Image (tube, rainbow, N blue to C red; front, side, top):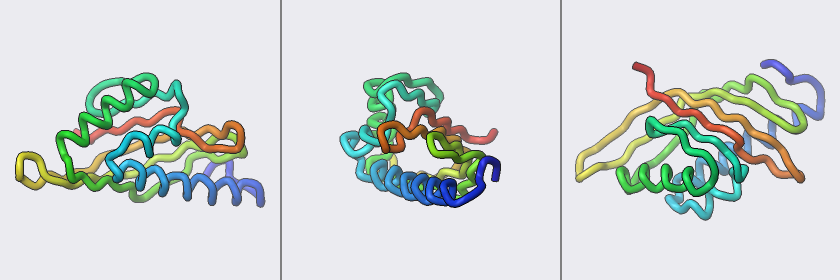
Length: 134
């Protein structure tokens, strides 16, 4: 793991790992009011085959996903932290989803990248990129 040395970074690793767990729980609440505080206002998301910049566009993307899979359960597995310091962290992972669409089961997985920044003592997502390997 790059950028991971010493006690300060151990604390940062624990913080960002806990943050990602909160993010998954907020996503699974299907309520953007729970997700929004975890995002930078100018965050950029690449998912659902499009780019979303800022909270209104990101909220629309989340709502689109939740409408498509109203009982979706989202997960993150195999997180690898590429860099962690006191103010930023970058990770890659496998994301999973399952639910039903029009009464039929749907599930899948893909690759994710998340960049976190710490401002005023709080971690926030600056960028997320989700893709499905071809």
